[in-house]
Length: 294
View 1: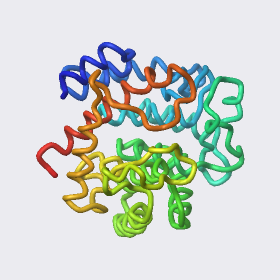
View 2: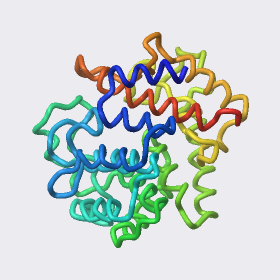
View 3: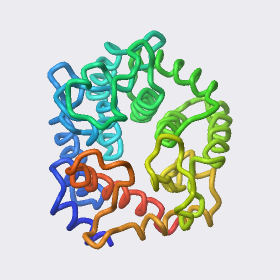
View 4: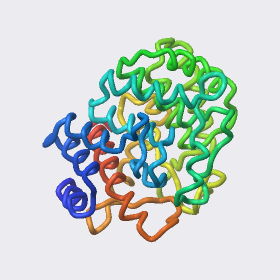
């Protein structure tokens, strides 16, 4: 499985995904991943240039900065200087209260899928803010923006009654690095109940099951998406049998060419080629993390 996946990434992936593959398999270094990520940095300190496959163009976006932080964190390459620079950029674009919009108005000038559009600029986005804050805190980064954004995220999470999978991934990253463990554990239990009530496909064979509102037909999320590692907050939301079924289904998704598919809408002819190497690296990372544990 891993050999075929590596062949796929070497055949189709760009520099960033190939460096990520090396880091996952132990053949590369955190420094090499960091160099590949920083090649996407803009002059003013943000990130752009397709580091997030659905966010095109040279205009830095909060969603792209979140993606950069996530890749750096997964490789153990999120150092203080890079983290502080991200905080400085985020602070310049923060809405009142400390939350940052997911996308800035500048995204409208470049090619994008219909669901990637400027969000209200006077409102923070929990998806981008919570994940960025959680990963930066987890790496030991300190900055005044993090303090304001942390308080904002906690308020939004406390008020959360409905959500969607990608927002849950961000909330989980926030809860993982939250020092107030009593609050974090209570919040995780509440969010887990929302996930089990309709955001996760517990039976991977039930492909006719409804997807969350706004998602593409067949765009289901499995238990291992909510818990990509055994120590993820979401791991407590599922039984051992449910997690094994999810991991077996994820492994079985590997295509004949060695890569893993994308499940969201194909908004232009090249998006599969651009996105699948990253999805393949993520699948390998998850399957490796859970090997022998479920």
